[in-house]
Amino acid sequence: MLSQQELKQQAADAALQYIAPMLDPAAVIGVGTGSTADLFIDGLAKYKGMFRGAVASSERSAKRLADHGIEVLDLNQVDSMPVYVDGADEINAQLQMIKGGGGALTREKIVASVAKLFVCIADESKLVDVLGRFPLPIEVLPIAREAVARAASSMGGVPAIREGFVTDNGNQILDISGVSILDARSLESALNNIPGVVTNGLFAIRPADVALLATQSGIRRL
Ligand code: 5RP
Image 1 (cartoon, rainbow, N blue to C red):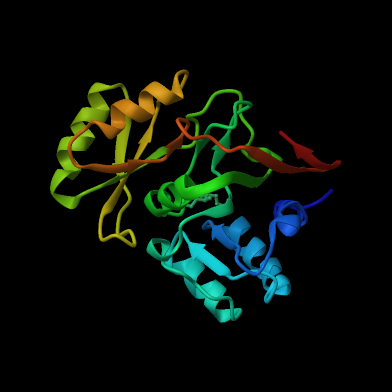
Image 2 (cartoon, protein in one colour; image 1 turned 60 degrees about the horizontal axis):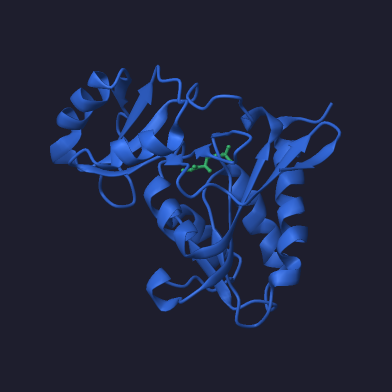
């Protein structure tokens, strides 16, 4: 029986195999955040010299990339990216995701939006029929925290402030539980329209293009 850590390693290895043909001296790779993305970064280091560099979705990932000697580029220096690789907190069969467990959702969504392909890597425990068991993170401007929390409550959610956490952008995170998300695209749009919301952790309007899910019997590709 493989541990969750071993499954994450398998997913990261599968992503490296998947993106290897996309590497060339001009290629800039989009890199996500989290424990699975960390394993991907460690593996990417073995391909150093075969691609130009990476854009990171967090300070944490930027540091890990730099520690491996991989050039970290600012997104503003980059016109296009063949691929963005990141984990997820939940993913459904439509490849819609909840992300932001690590609090990096805003930069993740921005970097992913520039990439041609979004490759989600996860262990099979992240695959769900209906999104929403994992509390949905929302990054809010601090001034708007309570107003957004009230708006989320009026939509049926139970908001909780992520105590002591500040995002890379200097904002706060509200985690919304108690919502069974049947129409993820509509909810993503509705949450985006609440004043003070920077980003919500639904990745449904722009879902992943490929999911590489590690199972006890190998990689399942969706
Ligand atoms: C960070 C994220 C991560 O992708 C998500 O939390 C999954 O993390 P892990 O790979 O550690 O399970 O969205 O903001």
